[in-house]
Length: 199
Image (cartoon, rainbow, N blue to C red; front, side):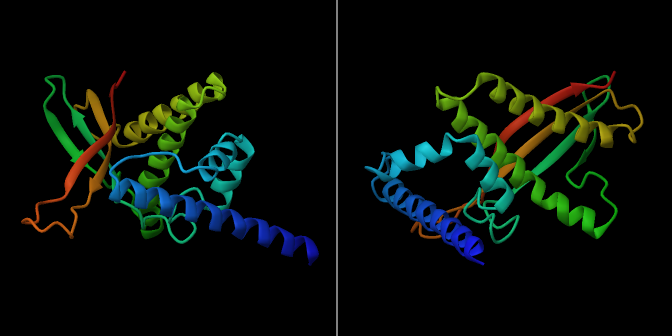
């Protein structure tokens, strides 16, 4: 019982600390339109982010994103699309459902784009930290590439005359509802794009 209480205190202390850090950082970036470090808090945050064990802990507990503890798809909407091309580079098939037939499969896949986007973002932070092992960064980059490659292969093999495919991770950037000007459409931003030939 005592160990469980200690773990709960440590766990929720981490959540409180990083939530406070993100809140202050967000406030500064919105109001001051800059991204400057926060004295003392930023150095503690950087220390924990540099620990591989801590990053694993965050993934396992679902606290690796601001919304990860509560749900899989609450953050900025992300999705993956595939375009299958023939020999003449004409698009013969375009999809974002990846042929999942069951409701469970579809709902689980809905959380994948957010997960892989967070994974890519974490890898980017690791690249900026000079202390990070380069082999680990290369492995993480390869993992993302392989995931997209095999996800695309899974769909392409069912399409006749498929010669190559292009698979993209896309983020929908919502408009600001506080903008006094006329509201425009959401902005679609391509985070990652891979193209593979079917050999």
